[in-house]
Structure formats: C-alpha cells, structure tokens
Amino acid sequence: MQSTRATAPAVLRRALLALVASLPAMAQTEPVASGPDPAGPAELARTPADSPAASPSPSTSPTTESSPAAAPATPSKASVSPASVDEAAPPSSVEAAEPSAPAADLQGELDSSLQAKVSASFRLSAPAMTPFLVDDVGTKLSPTPLASRIRARPELRYGSWGLVTELDVASGTSLGVPQDGFAARTPYPGLSATELRQLFLEYRAKTWVLRAGQQATNWGLGLVANAGAADPEPGRAFGDSRFGDLSYRLLLGGRPLFGLGGAFRAIEPAVGVDMVVRDDTADYWAGDRALQGILALRFAVDAERNIGVYTVVRRQRPAGPSDGGRETDALVLDVAGKWQWGKRRKSFSAGFEVVSIDGTTTQARRDNAARHKVRQLGAALELSATVRSVQSFLDIGYASGDQNPFDDRIEGFRFDPDYNVGLVLFEEVLGWQSARASARAADPMLVGRPPEGVDLLPTRGAVTGAWYVFPRARVAASDWLDLYGGPLLAYSTARLVDPFNTQLAGGEVRNSLGGPPMSFLGTELDVGAQARWKPLRELLVTGTAEGGLFLPGDAFADAKGGTMPPVLVGRLRLSVNL
Image (cartoon, rainbow, N blue to C red; front, top):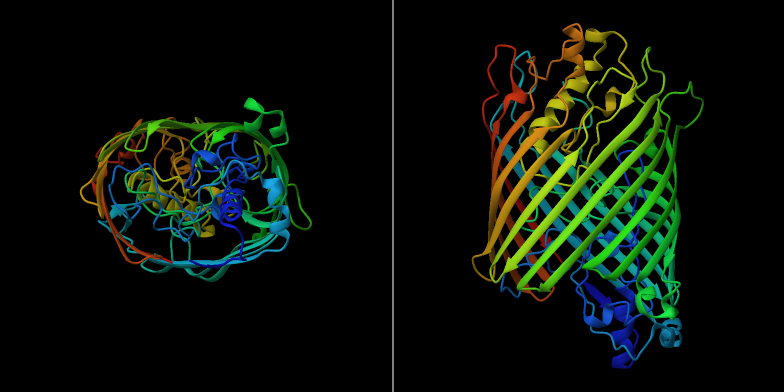
C-alpha cells in the first residue's frame, strides 16, 4: 500500500484516520434478495477511541470491501497477522484517535486535504481431487482448476469526498475445469480478463455517510449477502472466496442520535436502494433487473460488539418484453450480530445470523404451478474461544430443504457460495453433482424443452437443504505458522433429490446417483496449514495448504444399494499482498 497525505498536526491526523475507519457498512442479501450492512464484518484494527463514545461517526466502514484487512482474534504471537492475508484489501492503517478531537473539528482540515491510496494483491489457487461420481450413468469427475486473481484498489479522498475503485484482472479459472456436460454455474467461475468490482462516490459528514455507485456488499456473517472480499482466515473456514455480490447502490447511513449521548450513540440506521449487478439469482448483464429497497437498524458498541436487523423488499423482472417468467417478489428479514468477551489472547466470541425469505417467483414455473410461493429459513452460529496459542471454533448451520420439488412451494434455502463450510462435500461434490444435474435437465436431446429455472439448480458450492456441526481448532505453532483442522458432520433437511432422475423414475425420489436418498450426508475431516513471510514492511507473502477427506453417508446411495466411495481433496494457495 502506498499513500500520500496533506500535512496536518499529529493529533488531527490521528483523529482523521479514526474517522475514516468508523463509517457504517452496508450490504445486500441473496439468493432471493439483498441489503446493506451498517455493521459489516469487524475487520478494522480498533482502539477504545473508535467506540461510539469516542466518535460520533458510524463505527464501521461503509462496505466490507472498503475496509482495511485487520488481524483476527488469533492465538499467534506473530508480528505478521494470519488474518485475511489472502485478500486484496490493504493492511489496517488506523491510528489511535484523540477523543478530545471530534469529527466536526476536522472539517477545515478535511476541506483542504488530498489523499491518495493504492493497494494490490495477487492470488494463485490450485486444488486437486480424486475422481468421484456425478450422475447415475457412471460419469466421474476429477477437476484440477487453476484459479488466479490480480486485484487493485485505488482511492482518492478530498475533504469530505471520496472516490473508491476496485478492479480485478485475470480473475477466475483458466485450466482444469470440464467444458462439456456441466452447467455454466460451476463452483469455479470462468476466467475474466477484467472485472470492475467497485466504483462509487462517497460523502462523509459529521454523523452520516452517503454513497452512490457500484459497490460490493456484505451483511452480518455473510450468510446470504457476501462481498467475497477475503479468503477465510486460518481455522475460521476453508477454501477460497470466488464470487461476491455487487450492486448499483444509493445509500444513506449514520448515527443521527449521537448527540443524545449514552446508548443512543450506538444506534445506526440506514436506508438505500439497489439495482443488483450480480448475486445468486440475478445477473444484470444477462438481462435480469432486480430492484431492492433497504431499511436497516443496528446497535453497535464497536466492531466486535453489535447486533442489527435489516429488511429488504425485492422486485426482479427480466429486461424487455416478458411472458411473465423470471419474476420474483420477496421480503427478506435478516437478524445478525456478534459479541466478544475478554481480551485478544484470552477471549470468547459468538456470532449469529438468522434469515427468513418470503415471497413469490415464476423462475421455476411449471404447468401445475405457474407461480411458486417462497418460504425459506437459514441460520448460522459461530463460536470461538482463545487461550494463549490455541483457538477453538464451533460452527452450527441450518438451511431449510425443499420437501417436494414438484409442488408449488420453494423451500430450499441456499447460503451464499462465499460462505465456506468445509472443503469437499458442499464445495466440490454437491457443487459438481448439481451442475451435472442442471446440464442433463437442460439437454434438449434428453428432455425436449428444458424446464424453466433449471439454470438455477447448481449450488456453486453453497450449503443448501442441510444442517451441520463443524468443530475445529487452530494452533500457533510459531510466529509465522498456523496449523488447524476438524471434523464436519452434515445431514440433509430434505431428501437429496435430483429432479432429472426423479422424473425418469416416474416421480419416485432419486438422487444424482440414481439411488433412494436418505438423510446422512456424511463426515468430512479437514486440515490445513498457513505460513507467512513479510520481507518488506508493506509486502506480505502467504502460503496455504489444505486437505479434506469426505466419507459419504447414505444420502449418496447408488441404484445398486451401495454408497459413493470416499473423496479426497487437496488445495494450495499462494497470495501476495501489497
């Protein structure tokens, strides 16, 4: 990261930096709707002066993507942070603010200052896996995708105004992914020469912030609205972030009651409107027009202690003339929070998110159901305890399942694909099996006219129709090395149904392998190691190696009464952050 700043007294300069670090984060929700995040993930390195009592400005950054990456609650004694080091965001430059220098006193300095900042990163990821079955005719798959990403993020600030840009180059998978026989929505996005992730204008006042432009957004744990901003910190999760939700957004948020003092200082409302660029059910460039109204309210003591709720009203239509298909109207209610007790090397934290989605859609209409009712529920709980060099984690998640894929209700809740749970079951096996099922159901040689909504069948590696328990531990073996791992146990909340095979069987429920699905998805053991090297003050090189062994359960029974063989996955990742 490189920066230039106008000359200012040290006290005012520190207060200005704290103000920049303390704006509210906004987000969208998906798969059916999205919204803002006045909270956003707590990614800033904060001081006591960053709390509501110290500054009237909102306590967190306006989006996840614009937040500097900070150190996690890691047990490591390292001077090099293991947190989010695989992300393009720059290291935190937030300095301690002076409570005696309120934001209003900085206005004169802000009006005469010019700031420029550039951060960049490079990531190369290469997974490999043993062959596994993806259908009932014996098709086996063993993808070896090579994924790259170069990300640059220039920012300009003048007084209260800011211009933020983020650009990805050579992003996606270039080799090792099958081209035929699978839907386009695979767990690995294709290679894109350039992608503009963010370009927005921002105005910051004493107690509020206004943003307009294309923004990457996040809310709560990122369960359904996920910016895809950072690869998981070691032990917190496995795998890579590959997607990210984007919107054209007009957003107003802040702390209007700060002047009343006390608990009023922590109240952060926000209101906004979105035109979705990309999420799990809409793609602006593919002809989808998803318009959203957003209302959010959060109580935030600081980035590690907050709870909030937002509501999103979504109206999605196809561009141009329509026969009534590809329409969605939905209401999303999302409650999320996190709280930390104790200090960094001896602490306990809890985070949660609960989402309800209700509405109607014609995206999967059929002769017996021209319009489906949408009734979905998802939830996640993340617990963590740190004692010196050891950190333990316990994740519990639930996604409602669709008990009958042929009725007039859509009940299967789907997590955001960048909310990673394990390495093998959801990320690879179900991701590729659903992509294969979608391709077969859309093949005119097999089904004649493809059913509507078949393109939305692939999960892209997301958790759907399942509940799981995932305990893990991380040990700081040295100041530059972390070791982590744990078992994942998963069960289905509805039978693992392949619509194509079920239709061929005359309506008798069948899974992707042609067998009768049961409830136990299986057990997975994941392990990993991350090493860090900092040859220069602002250059961080990170190497990550992860592996997972999946032992399928009776949900993966085949037509002969057997069970799918075990699947082994290994992954290497190299990241360079400047």
